[in-house]
Length: 233
Image (cartoon, rainbow, N blue to C red; front, side, top):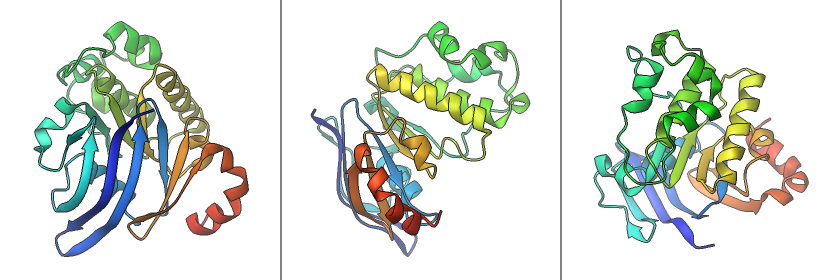
């Protein structure tokens, strides 16, 4: 498989704070990878830098063969990258259906509303409800669902299961497995590596602003002791 996303020597700063120290990673078309690491090691910053939210950066970010380092933030989605932040960003005064219809379609191949409602039955039942009336799990589903309509090639998720009930975590896992089966390319940050192991092809382990190891999902059992030590779980 050809690499859809390639990151080399990526450095990033918040003001004078140097957060990323030469991040290297790659993601093939149709692949799912998970970034693991303790809080504060640079996982979210990696996602925000790839998507262009963090502009104080240097290194290489290539997506679908194009240099992304000089692409303005507002053009990132039009290049085919969709980002679901940890805070979800639901418009609270809009209904579920209005939230779904708000982002523009940027490419062919996005899901129709009927397909989205089939994938997320909860959202169909709540389609007329404002964002303020949704549970945390429903908001997370909505944040994912509205990107699927746009036709992006890469779905990036930051801690999609954080703070959610086990039954919702299971449902989101099923949705991601379905998307993976349809060929969607997925990059996620996730603390719950047992959850991630059900969908990930590979893992990157991050520490102190760098990727310290990379391994396929099949090696997860033999790396559990190391992960418990590094992640503090």
